[in-house]
Image (cartoon, rainbow, N blue to C red; front, side, top):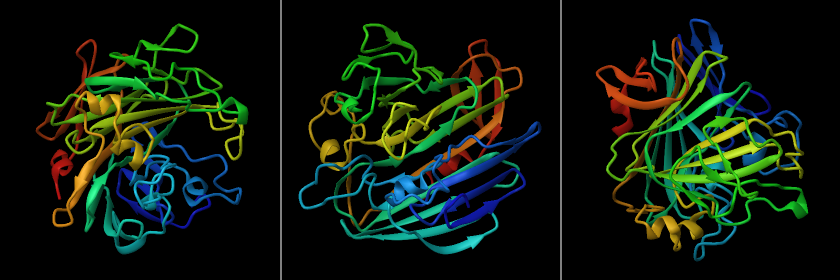
Length: 364
């Protein structure tokens, strides 16, 4: 599928493909009354046969990263590839049914085992993922790397957060053709007022924006929350994309704005209108060494790693889906659990109910 050996699952409302290389989930098509919706991005070079690392060759949709980040620096004797072995190894299919696939991976750099389950449920416009990590010991950063393609303007919303910061380093290097627009290290309390390099404030709740630039920011969820969400309303296309998580497992959200700011290969200025909404426990994209080190977020009391116990598996669940936006105005302002799933609200109090198995966020 689109240049990669993939396995497919489907229901009456969803068709999804998962690559064996890196376990990347896309394309995914959700069937709404107005027609199919395919919100996830696929890299423009997917079928060009370029000689690239596995993660870049397959780059699409969403995938599980462990350790999350660039991993430029080793952690002790552990030297990981970008986003870890889970994003750069070939997964083994353990079982497959029409609406569910189970895959597995034995890790080498830090010996352990990861089980992947991806499934859809009839009647629902959502896709479920569960990763179970066992046999490992020591600190680890990890997360999901969802990427959306913005064909039209979208209104971006996150659950209430306590701490927000622009990446406190050089995210892109102009010497090699990479450009960023936001002020490195700037802290913010609202997505609509984030300091930029030119002294102005940027509104990160509307995208695409800042064409010709790549930027990275991160926010950490409220520490008393038991439910986390991210949402994008696409008014011209008439739908809302959403992602749900347990913030006690995935403490933060990385926002990667990729809008033509990389002119080196394979990006070549053509990766545009892509927004990464990445639910993680990490410190930006530094990888394990950086996430385990001191950081502003860590100093403020936010979790950037989890201490793995070989006797106690780590279970990471996510739900991503879409719903029609009939009558919806502007941004999603809140998401609440309901008896049959979740309810999304706009600023005028209008709401949309979405049928989901919300208890799967906390399942094992």
